[in-house]
View (cartoon, helix red, strand yellow):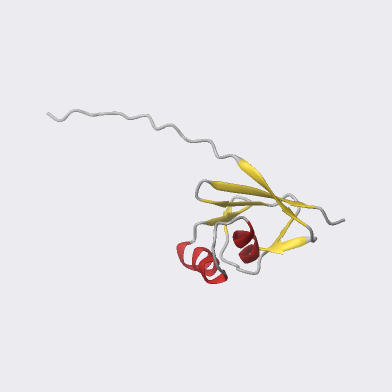
Length: 88
């Protein structure tokens, strides 16, 4: 007779950091480079279109040119950012 083993996984809390921009919006591809998640535009493209691990406001986003505005959230893996615009 097989034993059942139950494991409790602890969900790690994700700290959301501000991503300060000086314009009214930033495109997703540029935001990934600005917050050092992607080293190049090509790397950002791969993250967005192929891996589908980029979340904007809690939903998977595959649009490189998606405009992120003040208050929008960006998450890739355990990295999470909130867009904070200095532009009025």
